[in-house]
Length: 91
Image: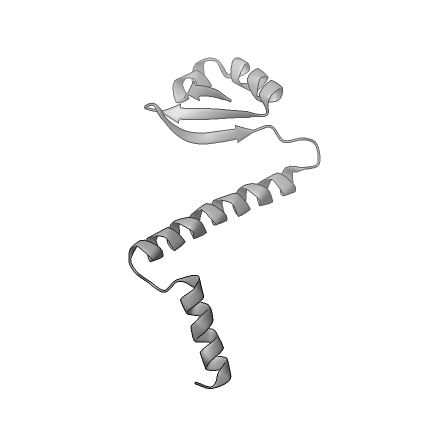
């Protein structure tokens, strides 16, 4: 995994594109913090790659929400399942 600054992207793009082709991904940083990932996309896999990235981002968001809910004392998965089962039984 290679890291490049936003400035590198402007001043030496050829080097970045070469490393992207060789390694498959490049991280772009801004003020020392990762801000973007560039992926090398194989022929014909654009839609699959976009779908996979979106799924990964959705899972990260879901896990974050789940952790916040647990930290705030909201219902656990087991509590939710028990509540659903009780409603289905007519309780």
